[in-house]
Image (cartoon, rainbow, N blue to C red; front, side):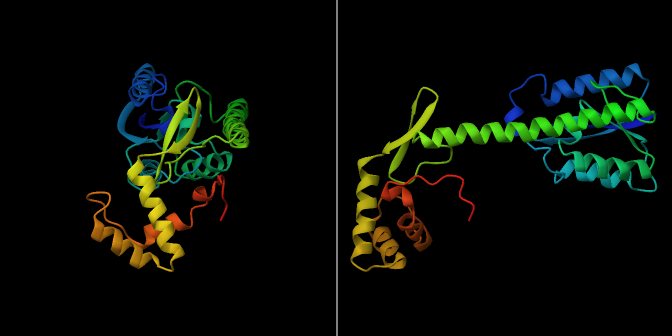
Length: 239
């Protein structure tokens, strides 16, 4: 049987050697060899989450599977969660593939897709994968919420005029270089004098501070509207 292999790793899994692209490729080639399957092509999505099907190589593979003239009848993945972590996407795309005579196989979770027991097992694995993904998101938000409650930083760059400092596993910010702090004070002082973003940016560019920096009116307005300079921390903003 001719097959294609699909390999995927998310950005947070890049350092996991067991899930790395080379490790997945080795396992899939070994599995294909043991079953006398010929690999005709591979599709690789690096640093892509399986929460969505909006993955370039995944979509190319699905499109190829729908062609009348195709040279494969199976897709092999390391685990079914490499294909997707969404139960809905599993159902939709596997039904589509099945319609075109394509089955999806897992090297680490071998099943018989055409048997009742195989269909049950695959369905359970897909549900477990989605549960893991949803539960991980819930637990992550819970930890981040506690982190915010304690007044610590929850990701992203520090505003201009501040710098990030780490204390153990916690991150916070403090005042940055004196030059940047002076610039922030100058921006707010000029704003209180009635100057707008266009005039403030022009003055700072004429002063060439900091050296080589090009100020835009939109940058000035973003600084003036940033609650961080009022002592507030904004997290998980919805709008």
